[in-house]
Length: 257
Image (cartoon, rainbow, N blue to C red; front, side, top):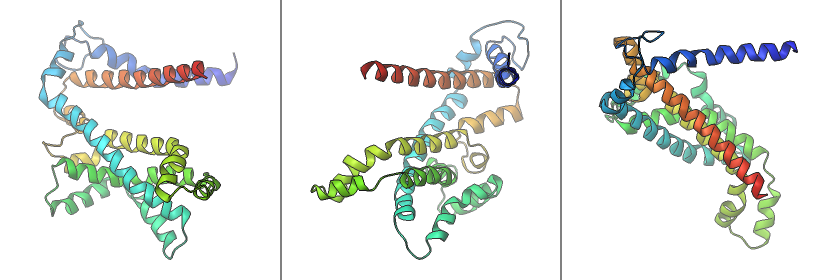
């Protein structure tokens, strides 16, 4: 067996090893971390769905991440158009300004967002968390959209306009379909960045807008609740289901073609 294959298998085993620990722990009968579990039950899953301190942050995380993705795209798409398509004074500074949040340590950003959002009393609200997460997700989404626009053939737009299509009709029927993969990827990265973000949420989420990563961090810090293994297992299964869905969609498209 080639050495590169052996190394790949070792890396895969190293990455997959935590799953072999977390999944059995989610079915434990113990009320604390214990591996191997002394017994097996679905009681921890029942506790997760009955405990509002767990399932409400989960709902919050999905709603906040989805809203963050929408807000980020609403900001990034016109910004990327302006930076890539047009030449204006201060263009280089505007481009640098949009990716600045990537250069600042997250803890510094969290303190700044807490101070800034305190004045309009948005700390502890969903809107405040969404705004902060959108700022953090903007740099990566901006880079993705800029790359998509730089690889876009503008002759398609010129041909549509020469055929009589207006600006908006050209965008929705020509530009958007071509850029749709880049828009989807940018939105997905914004969603995942928001869903996985912990540090800023610890500062500004509060109790009402508590997110799942924040709740998991607090669980590790304050207690040894094995429900956190349930959450980890469910997130792992959610990712697996997404990959399977993508594979099924590609297979159906291949058969249709």
